[in-house]
Length: 111
Image 1 (tube, one colour):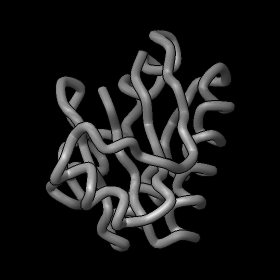
Image 2 (tube, rainbow, N blue to C red):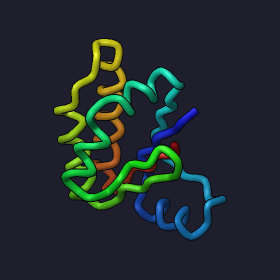
Image 3 (cartoon, rainbow, N blue to C red):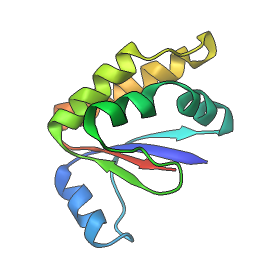
């Protein structure tokens, strides 16, 4: 299972970066294999990389905590092409982004 977390605070991410045993708090989205495939096969990862130069890696944890990068991720998700089955996933991702933006925190991808 893969997980995406919109953290409660940026400080939470800093603590995690310094100690991987630190437990992140916030809103969590669990991706089963089907949801992960919808995400990975969409154009999100490639478009986000082209805009920011930051790769959402499928083999290691990716932290996005820059306000501009989170805004760009939101725009990429809004414009992404999901199949009808992935439309709920798109909404779930946008809710996570909104949570992170409201708290000025970040998004962590555990892939």
